[in-house]
Amino acid sequence: MTIELSRQSFLRLATASTALFFIPRVRADDSLEELKHMLFNDPESPTAGNSNGNLTIIDFFDYNCPFCKATAPHLERIVRSDGNIRVVYKDWPILEETSISGARLALAAKYQGKYLAAHEAMMNIPGTGVAVEKMLAAIRKTDVDIDRLNQDMKINASAIDALIKRNLEQADAIGLQGTPGFLVGKFRVNQALTYEGFQHVVADAREAAAKEPNRREEHR
Image 1 (cartoon, one colour):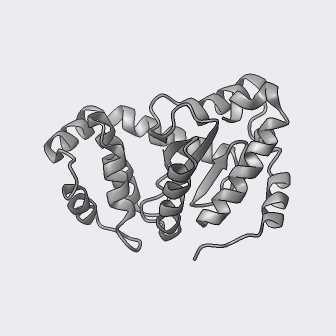
Image 2 (cartoon, one colour):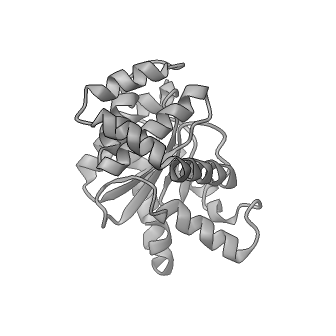
């Protein structure tokens, strides 16, 4: 189930998360800068929303995560209603063997400009332990070209798996414990959120960014 937090709770969460980019696992300054850059600006990571938005939400998820599926429409709603949010999708397949297959399918769809179609189709499959055949059946109902999808998945297998590996490493580096996980600006949120929850943490992230004008671009 999703967890609704009061604004006071979110403020406590935000305060606890201000040290996000000073995680002990990332010690060298150059490694820290590279982590921050790849989290927010990995050129291979699919994105949505306003590419010039003043706030970035990074979404770590698994296609077998029921909490991710419950949160997805709330994330889509806040991005749509706000109009000034950029989303970076981090396929993080950690729950089932078929989670890896789902991530590969979605990322292969990116090569024909249909990542979101595949992503939303699989996010709309209820439950966990979803079979690959069921994932493909859901994608077939979209305008994704399945023949090209299979071809792109083979041709770009190394690049797709390298991106998944980077996502796994990034999630570990920032201390995520499970799905869903979000970076909202510089704040880490490791739980499901409602629309109201996103509203609160988005407001807090913007407030924090406004106090650090020289670092705003890092957590945009």
